[in-house]
Length: 202
Ligand code: ITT
Image 1 (cartoon, protein in one colour):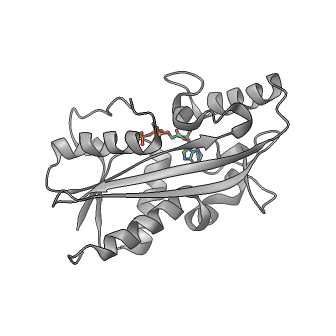
Image 2 (tube, rainbow, N blue to C red):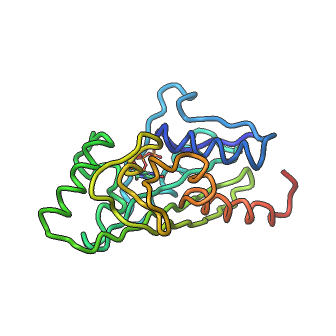
C-alpha cells in the first residue's frame, strides 16, 4: 500500500521511513515535498495530538483516499514547567535551528538554576486511512538533559538527551538505539498494532 508521511522534518522522515521499511517493507512511502505548492499547516493546537491531527488533516485534504501518517513530538522538561513541549521545534524562535534550540534549553536550565534535569520525549502518531478511520498512538522516552551536547547523530535535542539507564546521549547512541527505544519507535509500534486490528488486509 501507499502511505504519505505528513512531515517536513528530515530527521523524522528518515526515522519513520526506516521504521516502515523495517516492519512493512512492501509499503510505498511518499512525502509532501512531492506535492508542488503544498506547505506545512500552522500548528495551532494546544496538545501533541491536536497538532498531529492538524498535519494529517491538511495533507488528507490534498491526498484524499490515501493512508496519511503524521506525528507531533517534542521534549518535555518538568523543571522548565513542561517547556519546550509542543513548542520544541520553535523554542528559540520561528525559524530556529536545532543548535539554537539546544543552546536555549541549556541556557534556560542554567539561568533558572534548575537542578532536576529529568525530561522526556513524547511522540503522538496519528493516521487516517482511505476509509476515513483515524488512529492515535503515543510513545514516551524518559531520560535527562546532559550538561553539554555530545554526539553527532540524529537531530533536534538528541545531542543533549540521555535516555534512562544509559550514559550516552541519543546523538551518541545512534539510529539503531532510537529505532528500538525512542518515543517515535514506541508510538509506531503501538500504531502498527492498531493498524493490524483493522478489518482489512494491508
Ligand atoms: P513537522 O511538523 O513537519 O513534522 P517539526 O520539526 O515542526 O516537523 P514538530 O512540530 O513535531 O515537528 O516538532 C518536533 C520537535 O521536537 C523537533 O523539531 C525536535 O526539535 C524535537 N524532537 C522531536 N523528536 C525528536 C527526536 O527524536 N530527537 C530529537 N529531537 C526531537
